[in-house]
Structures are given as structure tokens and as C-alpha cells.
Image 1 (cartoon, rainbow, N blue to C red):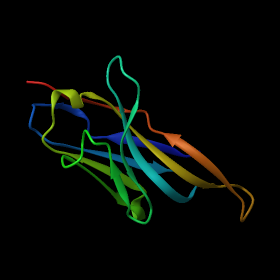
Image 2 (cartoon, rainbow, N blue to C red):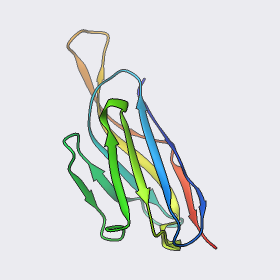
Image 3 (cartoon, rainbow, N blue to C red):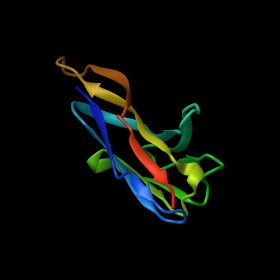
Image 4 (cartoon, rainbow, N blue to C red):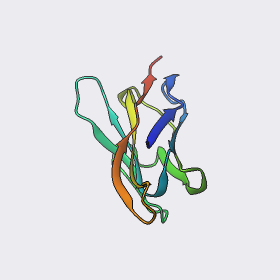
Length: 125
């Protein structure tokens, strides 16, 4: 069983900062992409930031210059540092990962796309 567990959400005032974490656990052989998505009330889920195992990153235009995605590959963990938060950043933030999971057969793996349960970020005064 492979799972992602997010933490770090909460209530913050406009202009404030939060750091989200997402840790992958289970029978993991390797992880390629680890991304952050968000879904605001009444809106579709949108991609916020992406990261590769090699260190490449990309951001949605709405968060460029304010958010930073980073990874600790040794800990199978991805972070999202969010600065200069705005009320429109209010959403449930989801972690997503592309994982090669080990199986009971040596040398055989399963390719999985795994989502976390989400963590709520509320930006309000």
C-alpha cells in the first residue's frame, strides 16, 4: 500500500506564509513527478506546481514568484512554501505523485498515480 499524507494547512492572514508537506510511504521503489494541485470552492482542481526527481520545477502563473516547490528525495517528501498569500489562494491543496511501487515479485513493479487526502488553506483577515 502506497499513500501520500499532507500536512501544514491552516488559517493565515493575507500577506502571510505557510509551508505544506507531503510524505509518501509504503512499498516505494522510485518516485518521478511530485506535484501540488488545489481546488477552491466551486472551482475545478488546478495544477499549482510540479517537480521532477531531477530537480526541475514549474509553476502556475498565478503563483509564480510567491510559491516554491521543493523535494527531499531521501525522505520521499515534497514541500510547498507559500509566501505573500492572497485570499484567492484559499483552497484545498492536494499532493500528487507518480510512483513505481515494489511488488511481491522481485524485479517487478507497479506504476501508480497517487493523490493525498488534501489539506485546507484559508487566507483571510
